[in-house]
Length: 156
Image 1 (cartoon, rainbow, N blue to C red):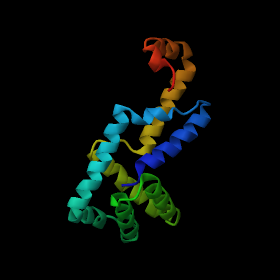
Image 2 (tube, rainbow, N blue to C red):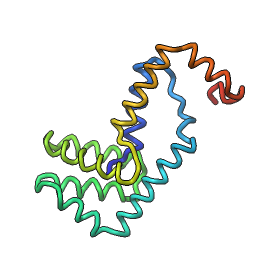
Image 3 (cartoon, helix red, strand yellow):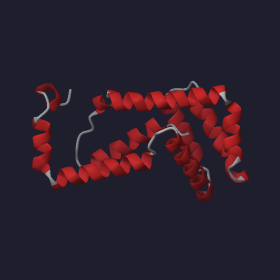
Image 4 (cartoon, rainbow, N blue to C red):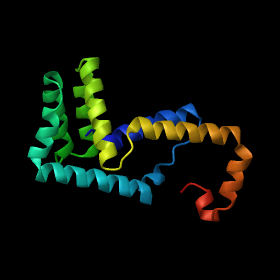
């Protein structure tokens, strides 16, 4: 359980630069985004209400991964703002050996799938496929945009 939103936003910025588009920050308030945020908040609430369940999940990890995973969970369920949580998790991850990072990432992926969320890497992979398709078929993309209302065709 990482601060997925901060991580996603950072990667979206990278992708936007890569495909030379201006990020549309107003899209962060779409129904899909709000649903994603709601699922993350419900997960944090569930962990707060069921700490033994979270501890049992962490106990399944190797001894080396248990302490940092527990620290990540504490950050995830804290009342800090998302940006601070993201920065703290990134700082913690930077201190971990590659094998521990990989183990925690695998655990995070399993948890994400269990509650119906895609991981950051899965979201990024889908966005990259979409960007490639749009670049390869610009007329199709323009035709799709033309079907939208005039207000929806232009960023706010």
